Image (cartoon, rainbow, N blue to C red):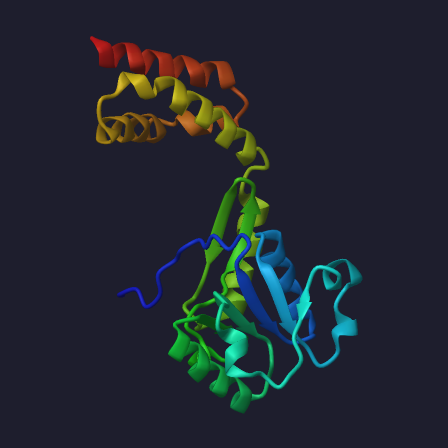
Length: 212
């Protein structure tokens, strides 16, 4: 089956993003955007529904939405149920090349908000391309239960050894093959099982073999 959407991770630090709504969905997604460093602007019928810790950092916009309020916005999320408003918003965003997500109304979406598994620094995004967000949520919960808790430690450990071994390779392709071979041979399983010294011996042995 051909891809209908392409998964990417956005850098939104200090970039204006607009959220429409005052329900829990808006608050949850708004918090994610702010954690990512976005400058969050919110248009809400009842701003008091937003938690005070977020409300103090939000730029509030009075409705109804005017086209010029989108001029410097990078990304828009609408949690409104009114299809007529979302359809108008979709047209405005299309004209300005702004990505838009409308909750539970995929016909007005130019990007899909995925279910996310967070095991810092690992981020896993899951989507059904709009066919079943609840299924994506189910898979997210399953992965959260099954993935090891020490993935963050693994990432730091690997970053150390990646940097340490980099001078041994003249090309990116050589370095990539070196690590793929080690991974295929079970290096990461050894580390995650707590046998760190054995994993490091595997790396050193593979480096010596390469230099012969």
